[in-house]
Length: 280
Image (cartoon, rainbow, N blue to C red):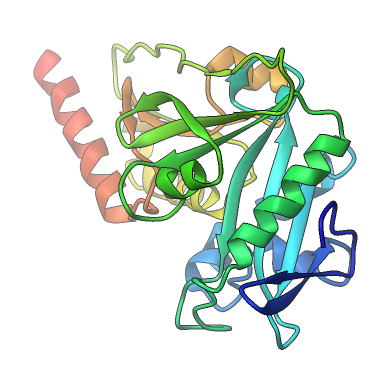
């Protein structure tokens, strides 16, 4: 079947038939935990993603879920309009993530049977109907989650690269202008103590988890460490800080994924505290 897969529609891929549906009140709970309700880390991350969903559901958020051949919801894709993406530009949509359940726990590994391709095709058609001039997404240059090479096979081009993270782009109209990543605003180290700055959007349980852990670890150090949380649901706040999600310990940015352990956050804070003591 060609064209937009409306709720409940069926699409074949590699001789299999999959049903693509929208998120609603009956499956919202599964979406908010990214199909990983079995995970202790998802539980630890809290309900920030649910609050983010309630904020975004009437602001252009697109979500598609896919069922396997047995009717089990096994994957998801979520995409947001340009004004809510951590990118400069307009009239495009940003695929924040596409995820086919890949763990042995829970419903098991559902990858490598074509469901990701089906989700992407359905989402692309939806974004076309919404009037998007192009589609941006991010991927990783290494053969791990959100592989940039997978998007390239589906017609996307790498237009920007920061370390292993790639920004990819597919124009839908001839006059489409590619976006660019926001640049994180510089943060000066304080003269005394350590400031932990957690920039958090809510869309991803991984970054939500890091936010929770950073706050808890910061409190272990008493007055020597202060914790600052910046919520970037408001596009103006995101633009001001130059990121939707980030963790900084003084002026040092710490990579967010895979989910930072409390041990690593604690160690980084201790190093920064030692630098402060040397200055004294």
